[in-house]
Length: 235
Ligand SMILES: NC(=O)c1ccc[n+]([C@@H]2O[C@H](COP(=O)([O-])OP(=O)(O)OC[C@H]3O[C@@H](n4cnc5c(N)ncnc54)[C@H](OP(=O)(O)O)[C@@H]3O)[C@@H](O)[C@H]2O)c1
Image 1: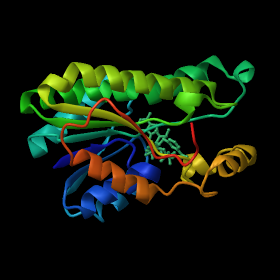
Image 2 (image 1 turned 30 degrees about the vertical axis):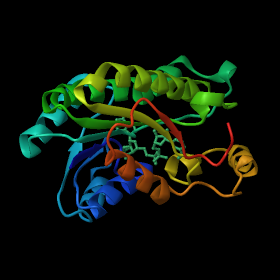
Image 3 (image 1 turned 180 degrees about the vertical axis):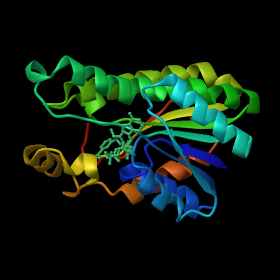
């Protein structure tokens, strides 16, 4: 399968890209700025390319999707993983930060779905997996913009699943749990302590483990419109 993973230069996206690579798939590594990190990921995968685009900009997204199609002729799996966050209480959240988080975490996946689904519709098959968060279901203090973006992403997932199901395109969301990536590690000590305290296992989530689930899901058929909670905190 040809798999495009947004934000796969590092963190969770990197783990997903490597897991697809390990399973013999062709992988399109995507990043915004960190091409060197993206190239390092690509160097560990037998068949892969690196493409750069800002997810907030539809023209940039469309251009790399077209480039990927030119190279591979199809895209079987789209993982909308790229994301950002910034901790601040609602009353202290700057408008610019709110806009930036929504543009990256919600409009970004919309841009990629619009660009990729056109080809998936022609193929009459495909998998789209959106990386959301438990914050989108139950909210999280200090993360109003992030929680709103991740809740919106669940709404986008469910609607896209309903609209694209007749073309045999499966659309699901995955909530991975608190992982010690650049994003997870930069949370405040208080947020990390709370995540550990609320976790049934008493541990942070493991990106490699969650990546295995994502590869498995993208190899199934007929499962769509679902939100898979891999977080060990009970909702
Ligand atoms: N870490 C956690 O605890 C956790 C928990 C639940 C959900 N998630 C979700 O999992 C996903 C991955 O998170 P992570 O922890 O791996 O984050 P991370 O380590 O900070 O990596 C973020 C990735 O997104 C890319 N990116 C950011 N803004 C972009 C933009 N405007 N255009 C294109 N690419 C952009 C980055 O590219 P560059 O390297 O080029 O900057 C990087 O590859 C996110 O959607 C996050 O919300 C994470």
